[in-house]
Image 1 (cartoon, rainbow, N blue to C red):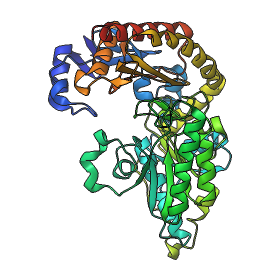
Image 2 (image 1 turned 90 degrees about the vertical axis):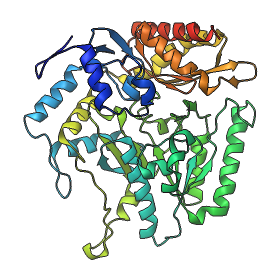
Image 3 (image 1 turned 30 degrees about the vertical axis):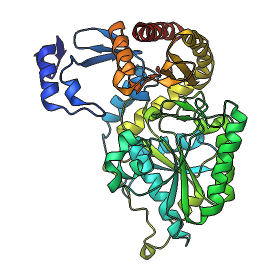
Amino acid sequence: MYKSPALTDISYEELAAKNKQYIWHPFTQMKDYIEDQPVIIAEGKGRKLIDVNGKEYWDGVSSIWLNVHGHNVEELNEAIKQQLEKVAHSTLLGMANVPAILLAEKVINLMPEGLTKVFYSDSGATSVEIAVKMAFQYWQHKGKGNKKQFITMKEAYHGDTIGAVSVGAIDLFHKAYSSLLFDCIKIPYPAVYRSPFGNSETVIVRESLKELEKLLAERSDEIAALIIEPIVQGASGIIVMPEGYLRGVRELCTKYEVLMIADEVATGFGRTGKMFACEHEHVTPDLLTAGKGLTGGYLPVAITVASEEIYNAFLGDYEEQKTFFHGHSYTGNPLGCAVAIANLELIEKRNLIQEVEIMSEYLAAQLSAFSQLDHVGDIRQKGFMIGIELVRNKDTAEPFDWKDRVGVKVCRRARELGMLLRPLGNVIVFMPPLAAAKEELDEMADILYQSIRDITEKN
């Protein structure tokens, strides 16, 4: 029985009925959902979520890739309380507020060198939308209005607004909206598993960059920007980029005068073992988008960070109308910015980025045992971003049919055993909160292993 100061006691059955009656859930086939018994979360504590019936679950995907320290964290709670006693929100349109200023300073001090200006929004998708518009308008201001095209990666996911969907390339998510979108040039992400260039990462990088350079050499005069998920492509199945590719992309973008947008919404703030994934190859993009882990998983704040060169292109006299005409009602929200500051301070205090580097090696050792399972085709990991691809035949990499719902069944089994996961097709995504301790990771890994074994060994 869930009890709240704001509500009379409501049974699980009543909440479940109201949930089915009133809520349309994202990325969820509601026909299936309403026939099931939903998990309804009431509380969170540490790395666990607790449902209205009192059952505890490990948060195995960090509440969709964004939780950093865990739930109900005293320092983050207190930051919101203190800010709430001052002001909950004031607009950033032509004004400023204290937390937004101080957070921007902290963010810039953490960014790859050369990124200098923070533009706030409220989600990863909107941060990408902003970057796309900035890149487009930048070239207009530079007198190169023919540079309107964007390069994106096949199977890329950058969010669900129209601009973000336009630079996305997952047919399952995006095909229905094709007539609403602007066209992009799509190139392959350099995946190692099932690569047409073989198993050598050196060869994959060389050939992939060769294809990109050919494209840029022919069409750079019409291309505004290239957008990329650095080091790990998330929604396509946690595809880890081979070493050297990101640096090569940066060099080619510079050579051919094409802006580089790094979408770090999922990879930023420690998720890959660096504060930002671009740091793995010492790359500074022209625009960087981030969100998710920025507030520790507490409130919706996102950022688009630009170079001084891009920012300066929008400066001009009032009558020139070079202003970047974009904004959101809750841009720079003081509550969100205050908790983001507390989150970044806690990351520093706990030396969390270095801890993730160490613990990711421990996790890799734990995951090595999974390769012995009959239907684990590939294990992909960078930091605390892990994808385990399940296949029908390991020798041929033949995938399970979508209709088999193997990924869904594994995650359902994990839920029965006490961990919440969400698959990407037949890739099981495992992204524990960054502050998870060794013994907590052990318990989560055990559940993950048992869930995969219990389901796939039956097929």
